[in-house]
Length: 301
Image 1 (cartoon, rainbow, N blue to C red):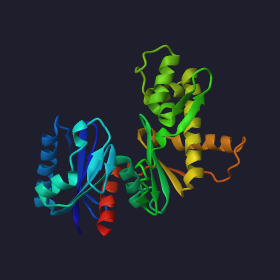
Image 2 (cartoon, one colour):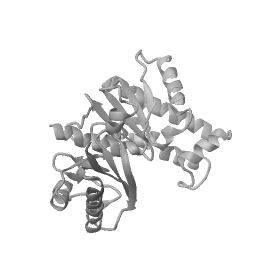
Image 3 (tube, helix red, strand yellow):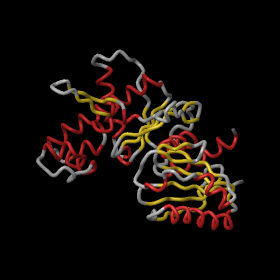
């Protein structure tokens, strides 16, 4: 059985694991992201060489933020780590380690990980929605990522969620209207607090304690999530929609969204197919599993 070196690049740290081709984790750790590209790639190479000697790894799989061109091995766009955008990961790591490298966007990797071994294991077609400081996601068709013409397939956060035509027209994206960060800012504003004084966790705590402002805004939040998920169902018609992000692990989260979907479907919407919702099984490890699954898929092409 082959072993693979898998990296999950995050905003402040890069997590890594040695994983078998069947998805078994053999060793894991992480390192703080350095201040420049030379140190960063040096760290990737150092760890890979060490694991080559210890576990005889056969290739490198990477999950990364940003608009990843998987064919070339370059990360486009912007993220919290500026120096990862531009360098060719495939060329650099091949030259230094002699191993082939495959790289994919982190949300796409999470979706693939859940499709391979997690909540979507029994499904060929699924949608993955990441709920956090913004709304992200991915579309999986026949167990492969649907990237789209502009590499924006599954970027649900850009979808229009609300608008106002009073005065100057104003339109608001799902990320700005329905993320936990947006929820926290709205509650803070309504309560006369500093804009960044609350986070999603605190707002849900206030809601549980009976705070009227939080109760009202959390209800709106759930309806915004329900509307977005309902729209995905009738745009793509997946077998299942999987929810990721820390907030999705909250007890009763899926139940609350399902309640709002029921209300919507019973009060004017014509659709009769209710989305099947599940939460992410592997959490943060889904990124690494999906990065490996992406490697194994591309290896067969």
